[in-house]
Image (cartoon, rainbow, N blue to C red):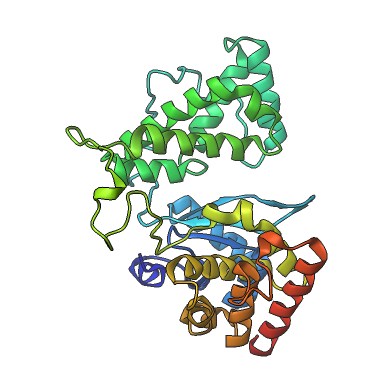
Length: 353
């Protein structure tokens, strides 16, 4: 999907909303995921930080995007924002008080206390209380109400995937996602409670569960059989061979976080470090060994981010090493050499910023 084109299809946005979402679309990976701070969006959308916060809240309520808090070391990092191809909020003609439950979700009084999605200590306390009460007391009800309040925002990605791949309506996917999320909570309550961010852990496990158990299942009557590699015609590719045209942030952020952190420490803005590293990784997988540096230097996406040809080549070399082996790839670098090479990338970047 072309996210800039997607922005043009959105109707009824305020000018500040449009400016913010256009910058998000510029940085987004193929899934629509962006790592961007409020300060970055304010500077590049040419609006105040207060306007950015309001715009993000409006678009999240509308179902245009969802946000997740991140940490960089001990400090709060730029938010992870995901753009949604279709608006996943409640239909305007549907009563917002209508509550849809899958059988596994307990029927609790909707008017009791609940935990907001940004309150990780509150969710941890509620989950630990529910465990202590063996899931029959008020703490269990707090967790259930919190899920009901959060499903359209915190779990919007899973709701959307259910609509896209599971063939479910919006209300069906909401109810089904709640059921999966509740089952995940019951099976992984202790792991969720002790996580640094219980809300993020709950969301991540639920997403994995819905993808594997609901969204990516083969249609009825379809089966997959093994193939003897020796019988595959030459040049047609082996079963399971890696052929990648797109890379998402969650495909590499754990492995490449050291590279990104080195770029940030060297002076590059965090949103640029993530967006550029994602694109360089994508190019490294799409091109042969002898053409990767050239592909990076000529890439319009990297140029749009502000990377000069020299910067793009240095970025690719930092990732995969040089073609003649004189410079090692990131996996073979110590902390000092990584910092030095990251500074080279940032220094080459600066003339075009």
